Amino acid sequence: MSLSDDKRGIFTTIGSYTSVIQATKMPNSTNLFPSINNKKEIVPFMLDILKVVAGTDALQELTGELFTNFIDKVEPQLKAALKNQVAQYNAGGNVPNYFQPAGTGVRVKVKDLDINGKLKTNPISQDGQLLYNNSAPNFDSKAYDAIANGNATFSNLQMKYLANSDEMQFNLNGSASSIGSWADDYIDSINVINKKEFISNVMNKIYGTITKSQGKTVNEAYQELTVNALIGQLVNDDDSFEISPEDNAALLRRAEEIINGIVNYDMGCGVMAASLPLSGLTNLINNISGTTGQATDPNYVGNQVNNTIDQSVQNKEIANANKQTVKDGFFQRLIALITQALAEAITATPQIRALLSIISAFQNQGITKIGNPKDDLVKFKTLIKCIINEAMKLINEFIFNLIKKFLTILLKPLILKIIKEKITQYSGIIKSLVPLKI
Amino acid sequence: MAINFNNTEAIIGAFNKILNLSSIGGPPTVPTPLILLGVKSRSGLSPTKIASRIIARKSEAGLPVGVLPSGGISPDEIMERIRIEEIVKAFQQDAVITVAIPPGITLTAAGISPTGPVTVFGSTIRFVSGYGVIQ
Image (tube, rainbow over all chains, first blue to last red):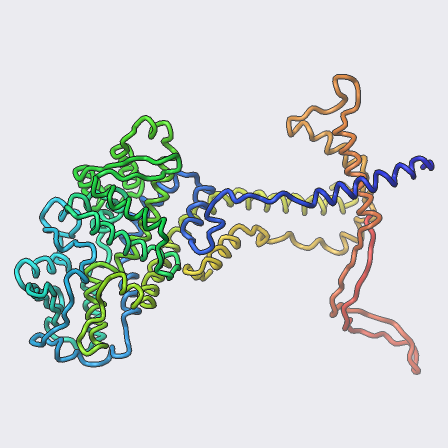
């Protein structure tokens, strides 16, 4: 090399070093998915993975799966979780005298037992057909009977309605060898997740159809939404029990919308007004809440739920122009509500409130500890969080396994390609080392 | 694998485990006699040959190969050659190859003792390093 080449080399080397140093300052990568920044909520993160792996239509598939394969099989695990969590230090003790069939019983205000006002609805009314499981004896129907007729019996529980104080009195029905065995028998007899009730509840969370039809006031709807929002916070591991002024205003606005019959949703492309009539919701529930035939097919159920978008949106033109975006927003929201409804089903329904009421009374000389639902969330925080965690574990596992199935489909050809590559490489090395052509 | 589905980190870790393809098994070891025998017949790294092969395969990516319509040499192909030359130069002049030999290599050694020549059978007892260059 000449002297001029050496001199040129100095400048080009300095230039290259400068370039390399600048190139190492990589631009900050933007988070394409909001779930990346959210530290605690795992479900939105998994839904984003599902969308990336299998496309946005997978959200509809997941909804169908949750409404069929998940709901149909989760009951034994939820019961086991409930038994685990309500077992207490006095589980081996005798059932107290006041709880015996002729005792003074455990009393609880009906409004504290029935925080969503379900027991005010007649099971055979049109709303009641959606809210109650009318195909088999269950706690809620019997509690309604007790309020209507003075008393009723469900499994190992006697219910007596005290009209003057608007209280329900619970006594043992039959006999029980211990507190623990009574609680276990009671949990075995309830239907923690009834498919029809569950799907009705979730769809009502989206459209508010049943709440409106029940003739509730804005304040009643607001109180329900507030309790549900606090349970939703617990689902996401937030036990602050504080609702920001903005969220509070949004809950009040939503309560007003529900009572007015039209709910507005931000579905990713602006606000969409939606309203699903009771007849539409009844048809949907009749089609998908069975335990045989098409109602067990996730694709069919997913499609039926998807059809409610067209039935409910008010501005068809905007909805059609943004069909996929509206659909994605709808199913993403629906899945979040399914997790919330699951948490409510195992912590806030009348049959679970009755259980908590009686179990807490056994620790408190027969006086129940449950009262205002919002206060109870704080009072029973640890117990409720543990029960919710058990339920979230199940739903997280279910979603994880579905994603795993899609990931396997994605990775299988890639793995085969890598294995083939390694074989080719090895064979190339061997051939290059063999001096003679064989 | 047992995953704690209540734990965000555990779920993220499980996804990483699925996506981590390094768990796919590697190829078997190349037989040592074959290496000793065959390595001498290798021609060694040639930047020209590597660059030529890459340029020849440009067509697989749908890119034109050869001189530009103006008759000039494609800067992209010149750059390809420069890139390979620099990589190979770094391999040959900067790379450090360290071979780690574990203890337990069996050996047969010959020596002398006061009584005369002896043959010793045994195995190495220390880790040993070796060095090499890429050619």
